[in-house]
Structures are given as C-alpha cells and as structure tokens.
Image 1 (cartoon, rainbow, N blue to C red):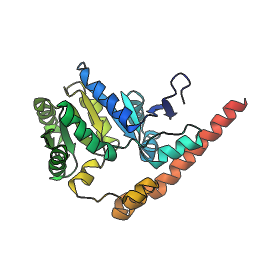
Image 2: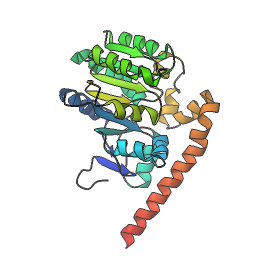
Image 3: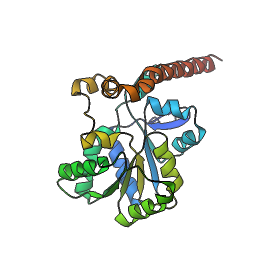
Image 4: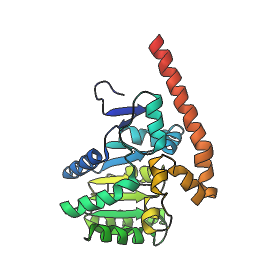
Length: 256
C-alpha cells in the first residue's frame, strides 16, 4: 500500500485502486469530462498479473493507466497475503449493469468492440433493454484485419460514444487501446475481457453462491475446460507462487 495514498495497492508496480464499486463508477464518470485524450481504465485479475510479469509493454500500459480496478478472488487473496485487504471486487461483469444504468441517468453512451460475430450485438441489445434507453452508440465484433482498423476507429469516433468497451482478451485489448488512443476521440476506453459473452447469453455466469464464495473461476473452468484449464490450473498456482515471493521479499526488506 502506498503510505501517501492508502487507496492504492501495488503489485508489480501496478497501482491498483482499493476502492468500492460505487467509487469506481464515480471515478469513471468524472473522467468523461476531460476531452483532452482518451483515458485508459482497466481491470486486473490474477491472470493479468501473470501476463504482465512476462510482457513489459502490457505492464507499462497498466502502470501508466488512468485507473486500475481490482478484479476477482486472486487480487483479494494477494491483498490479504500482503496485509493490504481489498475492500471490494470491482470486476467488469458486475459493473456493466450499473454502468448501463448510470449512462441512462446521465445521458452517456457506450460503444462495444470485440468478441465473436453477433456477440457484441446481442450484448448491445441486453444493455439497451436493461437501461430502458438506447445507450449503445454502436458495436462491432473483434474480427477485423489491420487494414480495417482505421475504419473501426472512424466508426467509434463517428458514434460520439463516451465510453469504449473492448473485449479482445488480455493483453490484446489493452495494447490495442493504447496504440489507437491518439486517434480515438472517446473520453474513456476500457478492456473488459469476456464480458460480452456473459451478457449476450453465450456463456452463463456462475451461480451467486459461487461468486460470493470466491470460486467463480471454477465455474469458468467447467464451462470452458479446453480454453481455461491453463489459465486457472497452472495460472493460479503461478500467481500464488508470485505473491509468496513478493511477500518474502518484502519481509526481508523490512528486516534489513
């Protein structure tokens, strides 16, 4: 924890905001008022930390983002192990309905980019229905070539959206946002991983009891074993070893 700012928890030098979901939404919407450049706001979970430890360009993006939110059980466990308890699980899947409601209240709009064909469209329909208002300014799937990128950016800008949600997986989504930020006019861009899959109905979310007990990852593994086994079986062990190493190093430093 940064002693000068008790609301920040550092992992690999990444400043993770230790705030509530309500505070995260307030921060996000306050960022919409600054039109100077696109603000990069991201979520980090155990998998993100594992990737960032091996990929310097992704790590640099997270270190310099406008805001980083704590996502999932892994980050909570890391906080407990390092004596920096995380006060809330600020994940994108839980945030999305609240984000839609807030956009409807404040007259803001969202552009959805990413996931497979028809997935973003179905998620857009869900969002508009949930908000009881047309809050989705546009959508496009994540299957486009390098040559098509210019047209995608132009479509996002033409939509006049306030928030871009990009669902391409870590670290591709964060790298794409960072590479295009000087061309984008949207005030805030966020990487949201598999969020569209849940709200399109393509993948069912874990029962509430699994989410409350911190084992939603088990459900994800059961739903997509071929795709997720490495992330959760190997990745979780890798993450715990990394946190234990950080804990030992901090203890040594404090004893010197």
